[in-house]
Image 1 (spheres, rainbow, N blue to C red):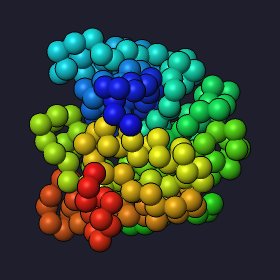
Image 2 (cartoon, rainbow, N blue to C red):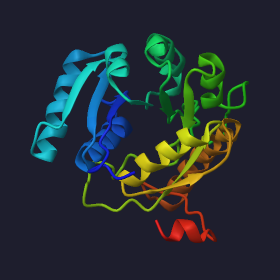
Image 3 (cartoon, one colour):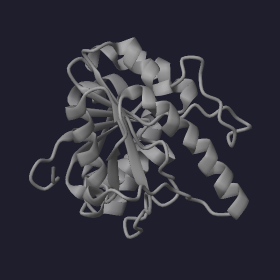
Image 4 (cartoon, rainbow, N blue to C red):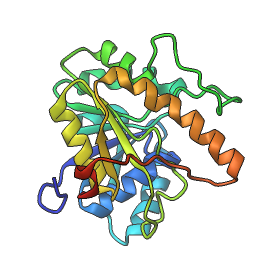
Length: 228
């Protein structure tokens, strides 16, 4: 999928945060129609103006979460773990028949450099169980640092593990990853999201040990990936 040929509407819930706004900026830069979803109108207006200013054009809009989810072809969730379930329940009726790309990481402050997965095993898999088969949940972006996302000239050296039970939904998500200039990797069913979620704490530990802001993952030995 190339954005200039097939632009779609993407709602980024949590789009005023560091990761959400960075992803939104890059998707808008690639040619997609991007809606920031937020519960805070003032913050949403401010962030939308900031991102449009960086692009030099009015490419992004904002809406309350539920309206944003209804208006979008694909919904991306980038809220903290503590707000994940409440946000999903808020927009659940608007998600039927759609793809939900969930970037949630179950970090438990203050020890965010320690793996602390939820009792269900995976924060994202729990949302697939909650929403049922009428929503195709895909796990992605857990291991991408937000540090350089808003710098459009910065090439982010990180692969994105994409998990989901629906292969076509995974392919759509991988297309969106490629539109960001990254490589998306089929990483199996939604239950495998537990591994991607756990890896975030490991990457935080690496950042701390080596005093860097954005350690990432690279998958080697796959010729098809080398051609993307």
